[in-house]
Image 1 (cartoon, rainbow, N blue to C red):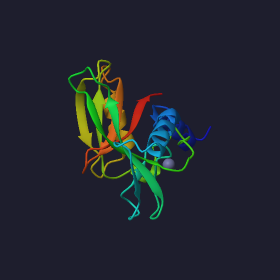
Image 2 (image 1 turned 90 degrees about the horizontal axis):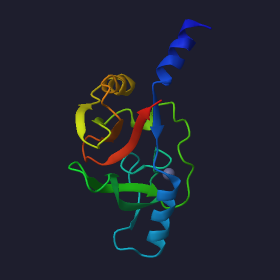
Image 3 (image 1 turned 180 degrees about the horizontal axis):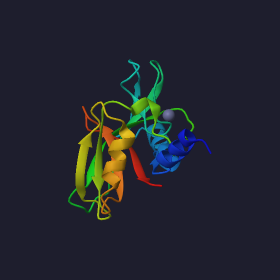
Length: 164
Ligand SMILES: [Zn+2]
């Protein structure tokens, strides 16, 4: 095998992207239809302001999304955290290239490392670096159970990353 191809395979096999579960997206769509007060329907009015956590794309201006609170770190832990996320209001295809870092979110993210007890143990802003190398570095700590990518400006959860 060519060395370049082999290097790519080795690099890409280090982690796995975990987009929002389809069940969670569908439940949000049902709750919005039922007019749940904590599920707002909004219309994207800029090309890079409304990231869908299910397909891991920016909603296009004019597309409708549901804004709702999501517990990225579940209740019952010191680092419990519930925060706002968007999903497309219409059904969309869950991000499937889980061995590849999502192309749309290479900038403006912070990577937070957590241990198996949901304690945040490290964090690093992807500041002009390759996100893959930041993820790789955080997983070099054997205590790191998962890494969460969040918006560096607003702090919102974007997606989870597990070891491959
Ligand atoms: Zn979507």
